[in-house]
Amino acid sequence: MQSSWNTLYRGLFIHRFYLFFFIFAHFAHGDVSYTIAEEMKRSSVIGNIARDLGLGSASLSLRKARIDADKNDKRYSEINLRTGDLIVAERMDRESLCGKKATCILKEELVLENPLELHRISIQVQDINDNAPEFSENLISFEMRESAAKGARFLLTEARDADIGSNAVQRYELQNNEHFTIHVNTEVGGRKQPELVLVKELDREQKAEVRFILTAKDGGNPQKSGTAVIHVTVLDANDNAPVFRKSIYKCTLETLLLSWFLPSKTIILW
Image 1 (tube, rainbow, N blue to C red):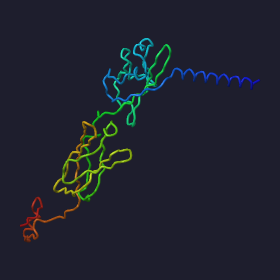
Image 2: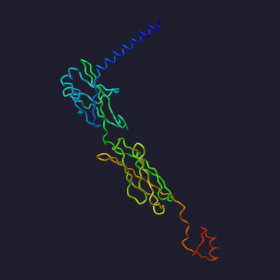
Image 3: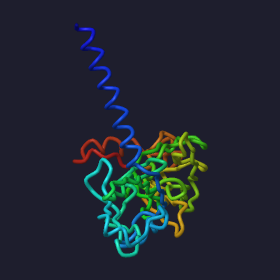
Image 4: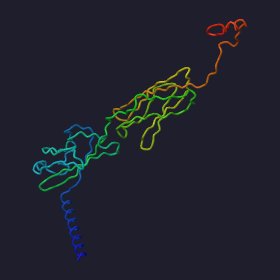
């Protein structure tokens, strides 16, 4: 008896599954895809979805056409029922929507009634160069001994850019100076890490500190950049021996004895 009930339930489940699949296949139609640049103004035209799907513009109002968001309460597009255009409903900031992902695709649906039809919409949001490189600190300070050898390298704080690809940081430039140059290591994924390279030894007795500007530039058009000031404090090394001003000092015994009675106990030499 239990086996018969199991068979019956299994049959009903399979029947409902195929019925649902048939209904969904009947209502869900082909996809349509668009590519737009981020930050487009509201009411900007993305594409004519009525023409792309072979729908008459006059039927859109009659069939109560609307755009529904997919897994998101916020709709970024809407349909103009008069023209059949798909237009921007909300500003699309690619960095907020997708971060550093290589591709950024919004999923929405066009819904038509009487009869019910669903058309999936994919909107690929392309990056524009709307962010400049930025250092976490405007002043990068560190200390370096004057005994540091030529060729010594010092890791620098990298600049961050919310954009991706060629719109992200592409190179670093260092203000001309006699002591340092810049070297950039390109890591896996395109991340660029700058290093400061010593090309001429430091001498604290000549210059106790060095300042110059580091610039990060992206590859966008127009190009954007960010700067930081590098401040190097030169630490002393024991590279100088004590030196007397004269090679020979002379004094008399009388002068030495007299010096013991002076308040400052200073030896008089000549």
